[in-house]
Length: 316
Image 1 (cartoon, one colour):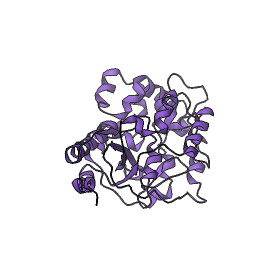
Image 2 (cartoon, one colour):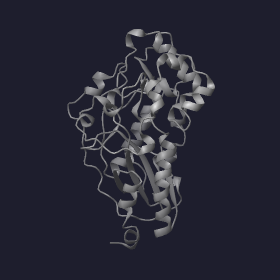
Image 3 (cartoon, rainbow, N blue to C red):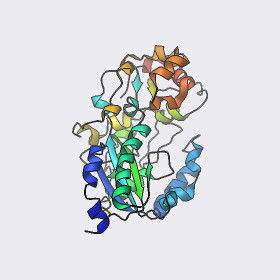
């Protein structure tokens, strides 16, 4: 056992206390050429839609060492959020990950406490990343041994499913690396591809954001083309996760209190969203990921749903 590990022997307990259900460690190095080329092809194809931020900082995406000087290890962490099947009945279709407090705040706060302990125990520097840094989160989760990337592009942890937030702690300390996840695939299962109502998924795990309901209801700005059908989804979409056999057979997991559904969301109807004013929006969605779509986007989504009444039922 090296000295760094002996000083951080309670890392597993610390992460568990922070709400992490599974973690792994990878040595920091450039991503593989295969992964880098695949991402470049995805960008070149335009399947990132209007999310031009995904095109920025390619050198950082390819080499996480540039995110923290002298970084040597990356701790990849999975924190569960409510599975779609475990959500209470809701009047409008909202993605399961967004029913609680904004995960950026929750996961960062939780992991920062662990990062602080690492600095105090081992020394050196740390950096916590939660979805906002140009870091290939799912790639590093695979390298750290957490699981594999499914056809729906989710990180699937065998036996636990895919309803997790990923967060990372980069550290200049050298921690013993986990074994990378053994290559797994979805086999012949195509349930997510067949269930996606907009044909946004393909066999090669490359999601076409231009068709994806999550992109359209959250990231897209401005009006929709006149023929856009959101299939009843007000914010985000859980269809590909809900039909995945790995989630259907996964055990119920303890979810942090901050990430549990807000009671006020259960009575939010599409009609109320369509007529919502700024004060109500700001009050209802304070510290919520749903604020990302802004009031204009939420009202736009609601009005679009009302134009397609045959699909107004929640499809989670």
